[in-house]
Length: 227
Image 1 (cartoon, rainbow, N blue to C red):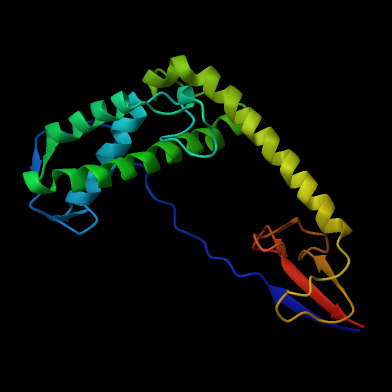
Image 2 (cartoon, helix red, strand yellow; image 1 turned 90 degrees about the horizontal axis):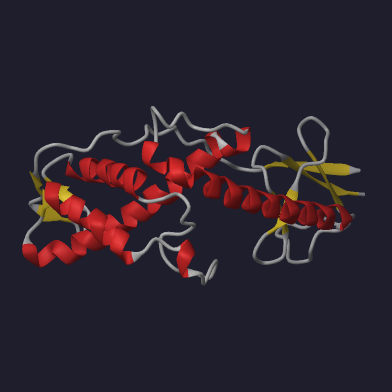
């Protein structure tokens, strides 16, 4: 029997420092923008704006909202950050940053995208650092404004995690039942296949968008065997 080991590729990203914990003082005039609305000059303006977007979101937007804007994931308006909240944040931005009037809408669109990312990242970190560990933040020190929304956040995040575990379990069962590689798999070897982790255990796998099986963990090794 001939076996071919394929190591799934993956890369590690360096951890990024979290944004500013304080509202900035003073005012910055942004003199030029890139075509997508990102601040080009003065130097460092982009980083300052992004950090402040994160601060405004963490301090003002309730984490009980599930999404920044409407999507296929929900049609319930109560789950979406209202436009009135977004305009309030935009007013904060304008108090500390200004751009040429003819480019203000372009800059605003870019800022809103950064705030959407900041909101989802904030909630993702709260879920990872607290909810999944059964912990609660010390609201006297951090996220004081989010205290009234914590229970609702924990409830819906726990429900999402439960649904994800169910989906993963279903995918794992399908993976274990698969005995041969799909004919469309690149480099398919005759004789079937088996999957092993580096420690000899079977890894978790899932189907990709084309219906083929793939490893869910990039650290695992796929073993293709021909008899």
